[in-house]
Image (cartoon, rainbow, N blue to C red; front, top):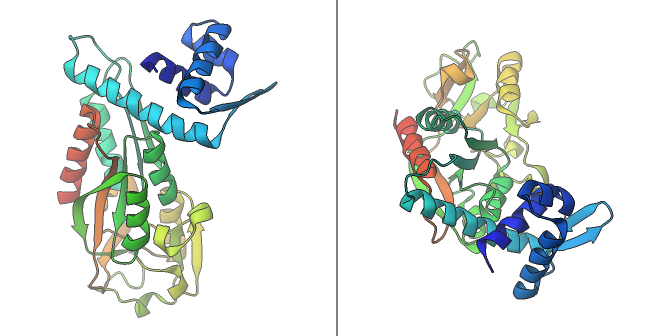
Length: 300
């Protein structure tokens, strides 16, 4: 097994086609096919099912790809750390729940490592996909929250996938509402106060259970529920419908607008915001900077 073979494997999976991958890698199609076949033989894995339309990754191929991405990422981190001064293209990917501070930290990262060429990715996505992205090596780190309500399920999923959760910040849950909302003048908002207003939550796909929810309280407790996929839509509905959502209370007016305010929720529980990463891995300099920037924005 070589790093070159692993790179070939990942590229073929991304392209979904041997000939396209060969062109991208500047190798002949027969040479690429032989390299992939030799890797499959060595690992005892059938990574791809081949067809006239291209290739499809098998279930055991997905597992092999996760290891391949991790090894390639660690090799890049080692080269970056011990490199001989060669200019490298900055690369980093993070998957996160819908947090403005996660976006702000990403902006800091790009500004700090601005270059003629770079490849940075931020995915605001569903909780289950965040875990999958880190497991599969699509993202170097993930940003999620844990609490007494979801820790049993999410924590077990983290451990079973050989991930580590590192806590960065402990927040009291807050209600996000419009500044003109009827409850805007209350110092603390209780659950009963919210019963008459639409509860806005982020849709979680096939894992649409309370344990995977980004919001701190269950939608089952409220008669009016609206699910959305993106942050801009959610805040537009908060303003347009006098709706509300529940999150950490860390809010950025430049990103979310001055019309959205945060009010403390009457609750004794906490939201523990942190990052996910793989066990026994060294974070890249870009991931390290991003995490430090997250801490700065969360402490503001």
